[in-house]
Image (cartoon, rainbow, N blue to C red; front, side):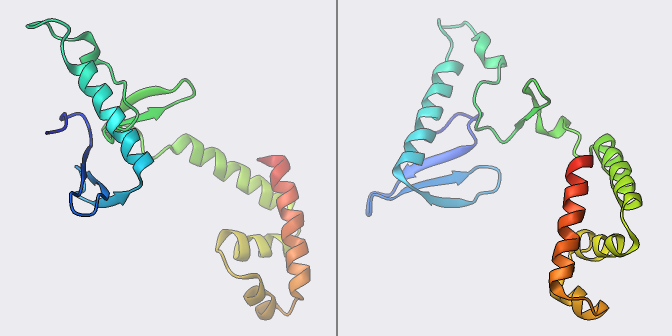
Length: 159
């Protein structure tokens, strides 16, 4: 049996070993899943098929235009109220949040001492390991860890 076009997965059970499989239509990736996951996906497929099927012959279902299934890869939930929008229409680059983060980060760095700012730049922003930073600067690792703790406390207040 073919799955509806709107359903993003193909589901089947192997007759030889009884294993449940799912194929993602967009990527073609096939994965073995446990029985609970398979039952959940099968239930969603059946619900979608019932919602799409018109109530009477020749009548189109009003549900067809609504997006009810949470498993579609074509739609994404956006915003505080859970608005559903096509994934292609979403703004992947949220510049207002990035700008706000950059402003708060600059304020945090201004509030740090010179040593804390250096630790922040190397260990937190650039991802350098504490031990590597301690060896390069000649500071004890415990001091670097305490400094990062103080930075995190200030960041928690700001962010």
